Length: 361
Image 1 (spheres, rainbow, N blue to C red):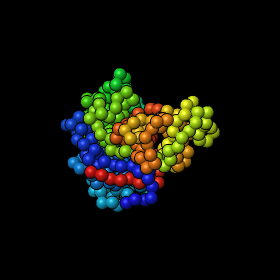
Image 2 (image 1 turned 120 degrees about the vertical axis):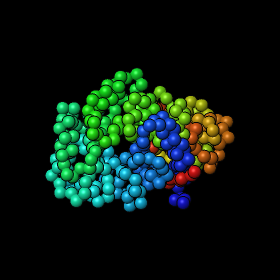
Image 3 (image 1 turned 60 degrees about the vertical axis):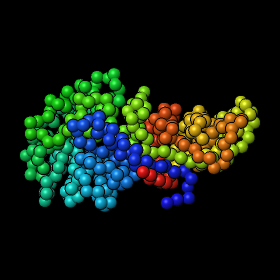
């Protein structure tokens, strides 16, 4: 449905399924927990969940994300990767058959003290080096035994950790984290999970029972120095807009707020109907590429709320109405992010509601 905007994100569901297959081939002996938090990294959480099949579970960050999936009829297991925030949430988790990560003493105490009418499936998280959330190694075994003894907890208990440097292929921290994690796996443990997108693609020894791909599912490389195509991944999102103006511009003339860019030669400038009101980063510097009619052209001047300006060149043939690709097919989001000084994760998750999502097969 057209919402009146010419700035739209095309979501290629065939590419999504292709990427799932590629990741499954990388870890043929593991099941997939598909991470679809943050509205499936901007791709539309419900539609992504409806498209992915043959997976073990979905991973979300917050309870409201999980409840939205249940309300949409998603019946697969759903894991709260940050766990629950309030003891009162536990009854909601049980009611909607939601699984939860347990990463703190406060969460553990809340589970032990609750009066639940059904058992709760938990994932006990070990901090092996991220030092963000998770039980320290000295606390982990006691937490495991306490959960194992609780009438509120389903058995067996699943185990999880998270890598902080898996995208650095020459960094041995991942191997050391994996070694630490394995020393805490019990003979009666349930499922074991540690591999994120980067570890799934580059550290096969970490695959275990469950892999947890996020960004790679959407066809974006988790590595700074490798592109998605290196792994046969296809971009799922292509952010598009149109030229709404093509006009001559003289040497010595500036453009945009603050007059921060001045032409050194006669040229033609194109104005694209996209800006930070759509989620395109305001801090995108001069030279950040966009794709117009199959050729890369640079942004000039400041990105404003609804528009950005590109230098088309004096002898360009572009016209008003021509399509502009901001990232996606033909222009990887990671390449754009590198120019801006951010990561592709931020680009795809920060699109605003003004950008319509168009799903194609």
